[in-house]
Image (cartoon, rainbow, N blue to C red):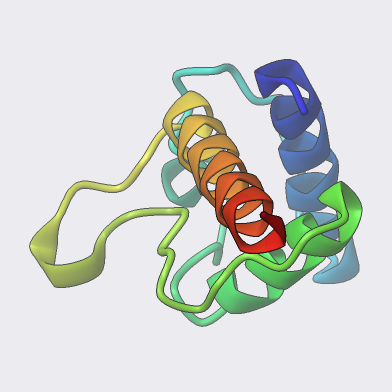
Length: 102
């Protein structure tokens, strides 16, 4: 999986969250912070978006991976930071599965 795959899937999922909620879905940049761009996109919606992103990418994103940031007072993440975090999580899972298969 490439970073561009994650960015594309993330944009698709964020658009789906907004349109499903009947809200505007303005264009995103790599530097955009989704919760600052999208109305009502907050921690109550993030678990659904995380689940949908995992399904879109074909792997489960663990519940303890807070892909939009903000946990424990940490900063909210940009689209690119979120994509990088998701890709790192995917690569970690793939590596663990590879080790387990040996």
